[in-house]
Length: 123
Ligand code: HEC
Image 1 (cartoon, helix red, strand yellow):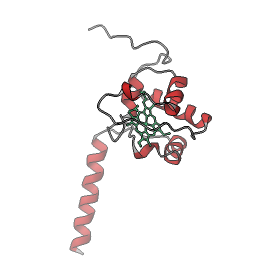
Image 2: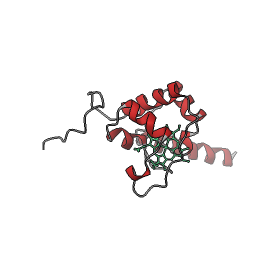
Image 3: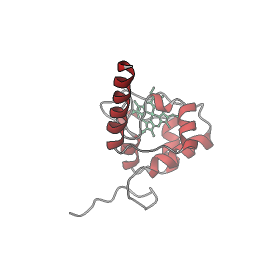
Image 4: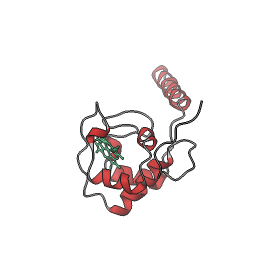
């Protein structure tokens, strides 16, 4: 009984800690694709795992098509300090494109289509 109570508190605390970090909620259809293609083993939307957080990838302002290309043909030189990502040529193109669109949507606030290089904000 005591043990169960302690466990419940631990679970509750974990839930609160996770909540306060305002994590990105991955839409179900995208999550299914990321899981199926094993992307989540190395990527998290918000934090660094083996690979960079998708939010950081979004800041690079690639086009959706460029991200698709980078999934098939990664350029490790874009990410100094990270191990190289293996080329994932078996990912179906339509799935890669859906994931690419979603990754680009994580660039908080910028509404412009990700085509131009990042415009520097004036202070
Ligand atoms: C085994 C680990 C691993 C897996 C699995 C993996 N990645 Fe990566 N990914 C990395 C690492 C490490 C980098 C940074 C180095 C690089 O780009 O080679 C990266 C970089 C990226 C980039 C940035 C490319 C750039 O040049 O800026 C994108 C986009 C990306 N991954 C998408 C995906 C998607 C989508 C999947 C699933 C289909 C996936 N990754 C699966 C490890 C992984």
